[in-house]
Image (cartoon, rainbow, N blue to C red; front, side, top):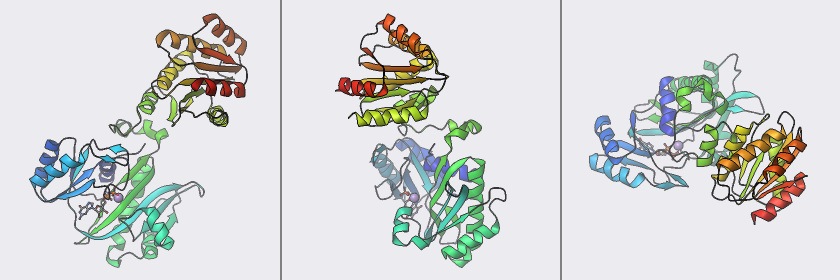
Length: 379
Ligand code: GDP
Ligand code: MN
């Protein structure tokens, strides 16, 4: 789960990472009130789940009330690379002497947390890597030992940051690591990590990703909603406990087991079709889960046909068939379905479907046959 900048900064503050004072705002009035409270100058910052806001005009300095009003009006509703701005973060302006880059993330190949530091912040990390790959310094952290002073010193020396801020930057990195661990983050990134004119070290931006599988341990974070930031279908699926990923095509897909669903996507693509989603109904899919799944798949207006590919193991094909019959009873289904049932209780499942004689439901025996059929029906 990705957090907005200010949500990330609120987690930073909780763990002692220095951040500028600020307030969120959803309207021009709230933005002005925030400016009055914080004191000028302030920076009006678009809150969207994408970087490069500065370049896109989503970050503006305001030196008085009128300018806050003007910038808030311009930025709210703005489209930043496909993301609409619904929220602002009004922040005390900082005076910038130096911009560094810092991040804590999981290095999957080393199977260890990794801290990164660069003295070339303010631009994309990809741009830094291209300009001067040696300018990004990395150290792995043994999770049993945690982030130690020597990690901070090594990063600071190798990155070549200003000598007078080696200690406070190290201290900030230690707190970032603490945030990363305590909040079950998979990424915390600070770009720029700011050195102010009075040599204070501050996190000026925050990019935080929380491991979705750990959200049950962080109910407050799980409740954070990003209006418009999430896909409608994906949000609906999450509320129903389904594993769903939206794709670009028009063929709705449901299978049981991530591996089977992945191969179903491949086979549909091979047959010349474009899947509209990944949906894993899980092992032991009960009728109720099937109804939920059909609802989510069909809520995507692009879907013109649906493929059910079920391989019964723990999942019983008769349960799936019953679920489909129930779903057709509850939902006004306007697109054709192709159903392939194989494995546990597949005969019973097919009998249930034959007896229900649902409109527009085609039963196919094989995965390839089912893929070809759904591509034909999807048009
Ligand atoms: P991003 O473009 O989405 O990464 O947003 P950032 O929060 O990183 O801001 C982009 C740039 O705006 C920073 O690198 C700064 O140069 C500038 N900026 C942000 N806040 C301030 C501020 O308080 N004062 C000044 N002078 N510049 C700022
Ligand atoms: Mn940034």
